[in-house]
Length: 309
Image (cartoon, rainbow, N blue to C red; front, side, top):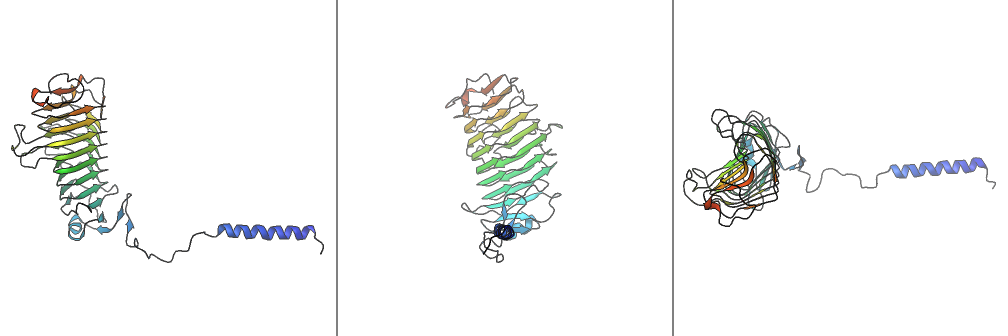
């Protein structure tokens, strides 16, 4: 058979078409529906996957079980998110906001993760947590109002406060509007608290005020201690110091940025023993990094204190 140029061109055309068809065909098996162990999960607004969708916090408290990730379908922007249902040590319940607005957050439960909510001008404190093994992360509190004006208050053991932003607290009308605060009077003392990689911006009072039960204003029961303060950005505008510890044992303060010209960065008083201070970055207007009283000297490791707390 004679091979002509028309035959060659025809063969090449057919080959190219076959190759294109093969490339266009998917190499994975066709989907056969939503069968499988993750079929009941739906993707939340953030990175979490929702195992339970609820219209209200009350519904979530009734239906949530250990290990659930709760997402809210209802509009919570005009109500406070009150969390009363927790999980277990191994299987906490996650409440996933995905950027949703709420009018402040109150946690009264153990074994809870609160992730990704936004509060603008909530009733202070913008977030208040009381419980054990609670994590509060990726939340934003802007302009808390009323009360003492605090952004976050915390009470309990094994707490993690991480990657949150608190902005624009207001000291007017006699308030002491801190970014974060804990005390031990009518509330339990706190132990093993991690405060990491948060941003405290435009804070009138301190970035952290931590008071134990024996600071003169507490109830005298128990101790407060084992705090880790690491990697936070702190901008406090009106207080003499950015962080203040009174009767808090074993505080570790490392790798933070003190971004405003306070008199000193850290105060240690009323038997705040065993503190470790290292690797922080100070605004050039800060006079000295650590102020300390005689009762807090035992076990102190850090730069030479520059004066009183």
